[in-house]
Length: 264
Image (cartoon, rainbow, N blue to C red; front, side, top):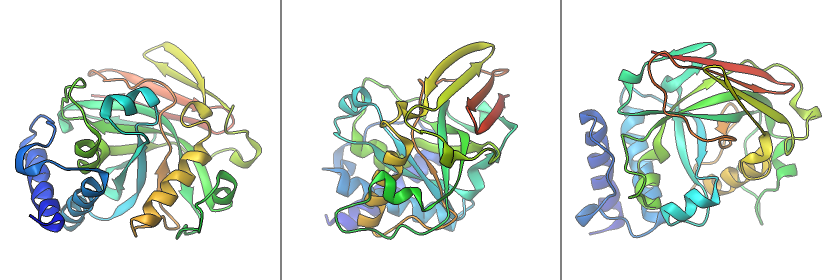
């Protein structure tokens, strides 16, 4: 079986699983993926199917598995990337229904809007290289669709092929001047049903700009580079929550405002 035919078979199977709201399972048998190259080929085939359907065009990308502990759990040595569809972008304050997901997770991030293309650079981008290409930075939630996965049975290629579980994002307003902030140390605050947790923007990969550079390099290598107008989610700063009906979350990035979601 060629890689192209395997990618198409995996994409078809995953699209069907999503339609059937089936539980996430590691790909096996004649759908098993040998490595991340094969996984991203399958992901691109899945994205093409979804773009041609009701999800419509891509509006950006997300980064997954920024934690070393989670990477080790999934058998990979670096993060993963997935696409964000324009139809899955919500604006704060947002209401999100658990019924729209097999299982909804919330992650708490800084999201960049690109003001310029990043087509690739010999030797790779640095955090300083990509800084000039950013047009805006806002607090955001990622909506995770893990399809009730068993977290003791994960592996990187299957997760990557399934679009790194991106179920959408919720964007706050672009307030404040992010260029005046040290994004390695900017305080963040999550108020989840009245319980408060604090961290810093650098909790994900040390600096959100480092995450952006990593995403830009990977996507350029895969011939799907970041473009002006794309949104890029840079990784969660606190642990994922799996909300119940009635939950409310407010995530604040000091100097940049807040993003709010209510779960129904």
